[in-house]
Image (cartoon, rainbow over all chains, first blue to last red; front, side, top):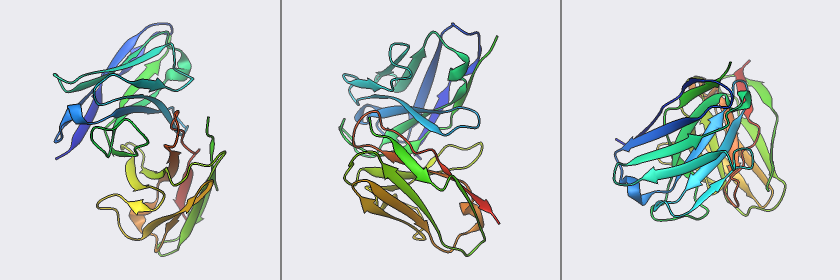
Length: 123
Length: 107
């Protein structure tokens, strides 16, 4: 059964950092490009970042570029999102997701989504 | 960057109705468009990619069409489990932007 589970969320003070993880099962982790997407309370989905299957290529949304870093450890089959200089606007449910084509870092659609992890930035 | 605009932002419908949601791209994206269904407390689910191809397991009452800048998602014979928020997303160029969402509510 294909499954993705994000973790690492919690309550964090403004200006601090937090790292999210996403673990998968049911497919070969190292074969797929992975994305992070978030949803702030009462808002829509916002695409954040993508990392290629081999970890060599990344892209970010303008809103998080220079503050967030996406990476992966293919040996441990884990995806990461390092978030720094957090603000209240980063309060959201964070989802990891997979593309539907292996060994591709192109124009590929998302197919599998993980259960999200909630991040609350508050003083 | 490509901006995606969905309409309407919400709609009310009854079980058995057919509903149509529109998604417009600020520039041409060929057929590189996906549709997702999102229910409260759950992960989004992928419905359609390539503007019109259903993901495995998606009921045939869902259909998509369009090319370039205008796209539609149609749900025929609405079922109780279809009441949710629907999003389009373009994956023609990064950032892979989403539309603002359409809430399908029970009338």
